[in-house]
Length: 257
Image (cartoon, rainbow, N blue to C red; front, side, top):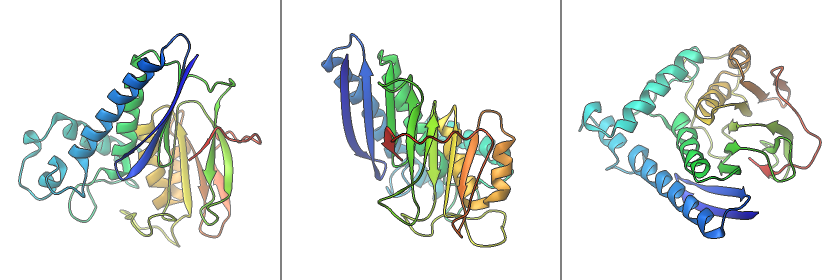
C-alpha cells in the first residue's frame, strides 16, 4: 500500500494530507496531492480577505458585481445563506464588518473540494487537515473511525477530548487568534472557549462550529436538531456540553485538530 504525508502552507494555515491507497504508486499520490493543493491555492486567491486584488476583496469594496466574480463566489455565498438559515442566524457571513465575509465556511468548503480531488484519484483512505478543520474519507489504516484530538483551549499541550469521526470535524474558538468572531444576534454571558462540530460535510460543519463558538448553548441546541450533525462545546468557565451523537474515544488520536 502506497502512503503519503504532505504539508502545504495555504489559506493562512498549514494543511496536511495523510493518504493511503492499495495498489497506487507513490507518484500517483504525489500527483493527486499536487492537484489538490493547486485547488486550495486557487480558492485562496479567490476568497482571501487579506489579498486586496482577490475577487472577494474587490466585491467587498464594490469594485465588481457578484456576476463579475468567479462562479465559485456565488456558490459559496449561497452556501453561507443556507448555513445562516440552518443556524437560525448564529452564523451570518453578511453581517460582518467590511462587507460579506465567508471565512467561517469557505475553508471547510475548499478542504472538502481538495479531498474530492484526492478521492477521484483512487485514494481509499485520506485525511485533509487545515488548522483544525478536517475532512476524512474511508477508514484510517488501523480500521474503525478516525480519532481526532480536540485541542484544549487553555493548555496547548493538552487535549480536551478525542472524538470518533467518519467524515468531517471542525473546531472554532478565539483561543488562538484572539477576538475575531462576531455575534450577529447577541448572547448573554461571555463567549464559549471552544466549539466543535462533526458531520458528513466539512462545509456545513465549519459554519456550524462558528455558530456554536458564537452562540454557545443556544446554537448547540440548534445543531442537535440537524440530522447527522453533532456538537461539543467548552464554555467560558470550563464546563462542557455536547449533543447526543458525539462519540468520545479513550484511544490515542490519529491526529490533533
